[in-house]
Image 1 (cartoon, rainbow, N blue to C red):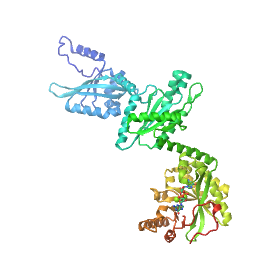
Image 2 (cartoon, helix red, strand yellow):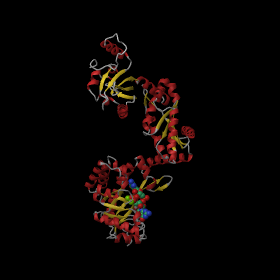
Image 3 (cartoon, rainbow, N blue to C red):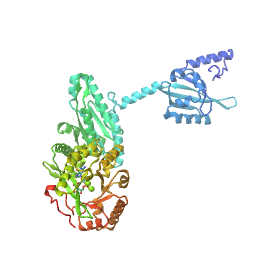
Length: 575
Ligand code: C2E
Ligand code: MG
Ligand code: MG
């Protein structure tokens, strides 16, 4: 195919040589050049007329393959370069201006080859364009060397993380982005504890190995947009690029510390390291680094948590939070909790038909704490699973107890958190509480809020279905306070809707509130749901919800949540 192709040069001056001889000499010359010479048609795919054989070692495709497959060039173009290169070809074909490009082709073995492509449109004796003639120069090693230089300039060779200089750039960039939105940027400064001992014990090879491993762990612990860097020695830093709260920064610090604390495999048994993290927020890169560094030293010397804020106020919040978590863990272990029960009244019959169990923490030093002060923390830490299981058991046992004392069945409502519901053993927790108390399942109602149902998946839906099949009722608590109340009613097998206090509170004084309440109650009737009005505090509110057709109600008007021992069990609600 090569010999059949016309040659790009004409021998005008070598008059004493035959044309064949000239052709042979030029071919030899072309094949000795350290580049690829080509001739392409000026068609839409630049189909190849001639390619010198140097192409084969560069890309792994023979001269014949280039000639036989007009689409080959287009296919081998790196996807990121394809459009630009094809557009440049079209431009040259149309304007006859020279082609001058750099791009990447994918070689047969998958290597990425960087090429410099210079071409000109050759005209015939009448000035008509004939073909594109040019050369390709393999500049891969040059580009790779540049890439390596860039790596060396921006990245730490040991860990592959950003180096100090690059980190500064990223930090400034993050500050600029955040500052425009009026937000502060968060910086975490991480320093390994006792790194010197590792170097002393195992030498620099071991030290390097540890730094490499820790660098990798830090990189994997941060979110994709955040920058992790090695600032030098055993010091690392993370810029939190996304807007974050101090709580978020604590979560990142805790995650980093946990990752760093995992044992390393040193060849001669596990090796343990730990670190200290300083956290600072601000809008000035130099000040941020300084403050995070100061905070890091404070974490090393004072903090049992392993991290500290530069801001002492934030520090106190973090310390208190962590102390509260530790106490909560203790509290769950020592059963420092108690249930109060609030009556649920049937509005037609004007009698107490059941109770809602509400948990309280009898804190050893702070006294009684309401659920709002510890349930969120229990949810975050997962302690709610154990606590919730205890609540279920305790409440079911109390329902059986009340049944005996009242001489008639008493309903029990128990609040359930998202973490509980998502726990794989939740169904077992419910059925065990029922078994242990011998409570009939149709006397138990589980109260779920919209936020509890928010992230429900197939498995949760199946669990709820199984619980329903036992005969247990499901209530949607605080109805109307979320975004998707109605869609939950369709999606889940809900029996009871508890209308949030915010709808009943002003129904007696504001017409708008009354209309809204009536709308919710009408909807409930249409969907054949059992309706419970929450937060009834006054006789007017009582009258309104009864008149509108609510089935049941709850609120201080009928009774505050209290311990059964303090309650007169036979007391009738006020009429
Ligand atoms: P909730 O399930 O909506 O419970 C009703 C809350 O409203 C209770 O607050 C109750 O004391 C209060 N309340 C009742 N009647 C009135 C009234 O007439 N006026 C006013 N202003 N408030 C009234 P509490 O006990 O502080 O509980 C707050 C929330 O904590 C509960 O809201 C529930 O979501 C959660 N909670 C309570 N116990 C548990 C539990 O065992 N597990 C879980 N996961 N959450 C619980
Ligand atoms: Mg409730
Ligand atoms: Mg409620």
